Image 1: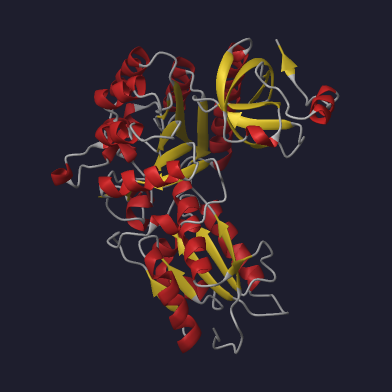
Image 2 (image 1 turned 180 degrees about the horizontal axis):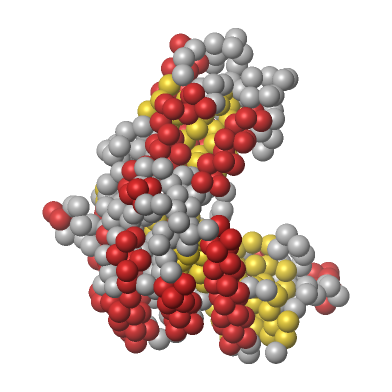
Length: 467
């Protein structure tokens, strides 16, 4: 197709920032563009079309995107068509054209279905185009997604969020919660299983809210999980992200009872102070949160927990920060994503003064990281000598005589093996670890070729820490 630059658009490049939902949206856009006849390339300097699929959760993410766009504007050998999609598109809308004059289109999270139409407008009319609807109303063709991973796949089940945490832009960039039709989800999961995918991760800003907005479907999140578990071929099912308020006893029992459902729950508390939780509009107390953690651990022995933590929220005192440290010590999360608070335009928290000095934020951030690192090492030590089930995901980039995968509880594991193990479940006995990666031996492993046996025997072992 000939553009207003009098050139043919043949190739495209997509860079993805942010969450798993953005990764899935990028996979869908890749499928749409390849169906249009374009070829995806890895060299952004040579692409005829460049799309940045953006995140707006943190200011740093936006600065990275703006910096990248600025560099694109200085490209001298050719002038690509440039588009911004994702949450930053919804947050900034057409104001992005003032910040980045060479930008050709802005496409919001709820308008991905319009990608090819928007491209046609840009190319035929030579004008800047933006589409940023506030609500997700047009179902996507998820089957068109071009997935690079042959083992694992993301499946969107609910878009948007109704929680309105005061620090978060998601309700404003992705709109209210919109659940996907359950039959459509089941059909996609069945097709993925038929195509050889072994693990799916159900995605949503709050997956636990699934089905609330479609009562006639009579399918809440735990109901959906029971239906997916019956599909032939799937070996593992995961989900993220959860809101503690919507983690129900029925969901806990599903994690316990369903063979495919992995024993890992991302269970974000954000902070340990009830006053700050109210200020964040998290709609639960620390005590209510701890009750749910206790119930989950009782119903699902050995369940692994992840969390998000924000330190330095406006007006957070030293003693309130210590309450967060106490939560980390008490619960001993398997994994934690810890951030220093930064203001986001368009959120209710912007009305409060960002009154915690940056050096105090960074000190609190570092203290939390150090505590969590100690907890993580303790968790890794507890794995030594254990036999764990690993879904092999890929050959190690560092050493091709090793393969990598994850346990049901989301632990990284590496062991000697060859590419023919990718996509299989293996029993691995853990003997050491390096940072947050467990290292083990697979007793059932029998290399298929004599030369592979000899190669594995003499392979250099990665840096490890043993008991």
